Length: 200
Ligand code: FES
Ligand code: FES
Image 1: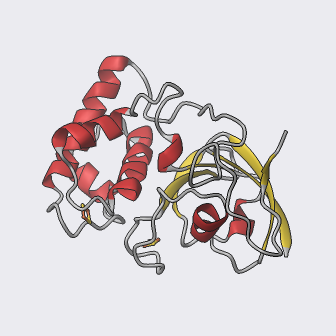
Image 2: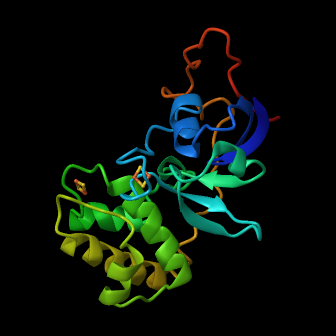
């Protein structure tokens, strides 16, 4: 086991993980971040996309099935569950997906939105072709992509009108509320395992 410290959606967690544990499994199964989903486990579909700080401290989109949990040691991770504002106001990309109905089954949506946030952070005014190129690592088998492209275009316009970047605001999470499938309730204990605790 290897000791790691990760900040996820604004809350720090120390935990012991197997070196082979994938970040997506750590997020879902240990921290209860089930908004991040697994579509393929082979880094093809993008459903597991989250934002994670790189070596320079920049938040960038990563496929969390292609990252080991130990590689996230010392990093900050933002999942779809940490994207809304502290008052639960939807991020402009989330709002645009809602208004454009840029989803059907919704399985690709968490990853698609996180990838779109990364795209708009890098390129605040993308053309439709640039949106399609920027999201090419995220697969959707329902929508045909047209409304997704429209939603990202709308989000770019909304962000421009608001004079803000797509980069998510630092989330505010009540201590102990994150990391549990049911916010505020104790996580179901796993025999023989210590539950990761928020770092004070
Ligand atoms: Fe498909 Fe990660 S689960 S890319
Ligand atoms: Fe179903 Fe995208 S909405 S896979």
